[in-house]
Amino acid sequence: MKPRRQTAFSALSLIALVVFLATLPLWIDDYWVRVWTGVAMWAGLAASWNIIGGYAGYISFGQVAFFGIGAYATAILMQPGLDWNFFLTLPVGAVVAGVFALIVGWPTLRLRGAYFAIATWAMAEALAQIVNTVDFTGGSFGLSTPGNAETDFFYYAMLIASTVIYLLVFFLLERSRFGYKVKAVRDNEAAAQSLGINTTSVKLQAFVLSAALPAVLGGIDAYWITFINPQSVLAGDITDQMVVMSLVGGLGHLWGPAIGATVLYLASTWLNARFGSSTGYIAMIGALLALIVLFLPDGLVGLMPRARNMRLVRQMLRLPDKRTRAAGQSSGASGDRP
Image (cartoon, rainbow, N blue to C red; front, side, top):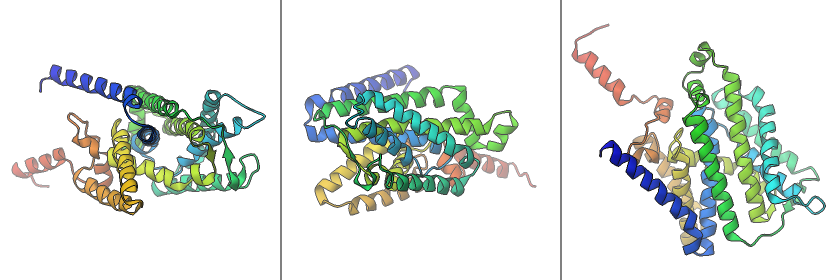
């Protein structure tokens, strides 16, 4: 396919996707609108985790803390006596989550690998315990938010919020100097530092960005489900699903989280409706992850035409890429010896 045809095909595909998502509530029933609202939410959550986990290379198991902060910010500010407008609560949650990430990230981002993952997991667990005991969060009893029966409202709210997240990722991490710095830190932090990059500042900025964005989705979710408690918005499996969706879709790739979230959430909905249990879903996820690691190290996004091969998972698994193998064969053919 010639470059012009490829560009035209990509543009038409994007237009078709926009039209499909924008008109979805007009031709499906409320049940499927709620399902696609969930798809939009998880696509945004996976994309926000991908900022720190895929682009920066720091595997965080505490992202649910920021989702929960956004949810509680909206629920608290909408309580009787405060009665904040829903839209005004969203930036408050994002700012609080960003400040919290700044405080937590300053010491923890000095850690690497499993140490950072454990530290962020402990941070999220500690926050859940605090929320479970203090009075203004409702403790273990939780908080209710004013009801809103407009299914379409939450679909478009989630869709717009997730679209903004993807636009920010595109412009900040795919098309800016900041994005190149983040990837340089991921690929070789010592080399990046030797080139004059303030790696601590870059990591901290990426961590704050990945914290503020899920807080907005958490606020929308709190208004959508009308009741929250620590088990519903601070459960560890929320982070687990962000990680799995990013891995399945394509770690470190712009569209990877969206693809992973769509495939896995729709599959989960279908399996639960058909079998009434999550056992099949868990088995499917395990099998899918094994197949992807073995045959699609770049995730499902690797099946897309002209998809960029990020090689991040391959590097983590220390699998040689095609150029490395070709260089080795060429060296062997030339008869060179050590």
